[in-house]
Amino acid sequence: MKYLWTILILFSQLCATDGGGNMKLEGNRAIVTGANRSIGRAIALLFGEEGADVVISYRSDKQGALEVVETLQAMGRKAAAYHADFSSADGVKRFFDEANGFLGGVDILINNASGYNSSAVFDLKPEAFSNLLQVGTVTPFYLIQLAAQEMKEGGAVINISSITGQKPYNNRIAFCSSKAALDMLTKCAALELGAKGIRVNAIAPGWTPYEGDDMTAQLDAIPLKRAGLPEDHARLALFLVSSDASWITGEVIAVDGGQSLTF
Image (cartoon, rainbow, N blue to C red; front, side, top):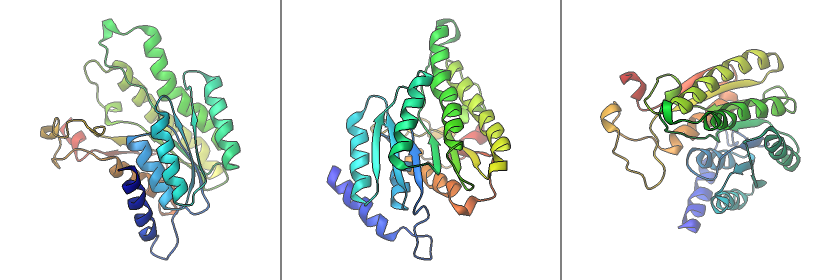
């Protein structure tokens, strides 16, 4: 199955152009955090198809990360995966230095890595709340700060948020708070970095199950009556980092099949 996936990626690469025969991200250098599976993996692979060299991070799934790297390398891309501990500033800086050194600079940053917690208010320990904010909000801030110093005009950042950043849910106080903060981080960073010609946007996925999860559990709340796929978000990410979106910044865009219309 792994080799079939590689063959399919290579075939799609032959077809992936901007209409003029050129790949949209040719010559770009991208960092995608948490790209060993799901949305992060789909983004990393699509960027590779479109010509970008890619570094990804992983926390525990080394095998999944290595499979992504192997697929990217089979496309002819420069690619690497580094273990990252985003629970501390030192871990963030260590990962960025490795990625930046490997790529020789950075043009695109995708902040996809995140934590998750489903504890109720009285069950959530303060240290767990703090850790989720560190991984989901402070780490993207620090990576933006580091990457923006390396980016030239035309650089692009995407934060992977969630529609739960705009609506409160029971037993999601830490996760919702982190994503709401990430949305405002996106807007503030876009405001300040615009002077450098760096664009910052966010994608807010709706219900997008992991591989093997029930694909029908929340369909009643989704007007388009299907679950999200990682590729749905990857295609928007490609648009937002490409020159096609050169006048778009500070936006938080829901990709949710209309789910947020039911809020």
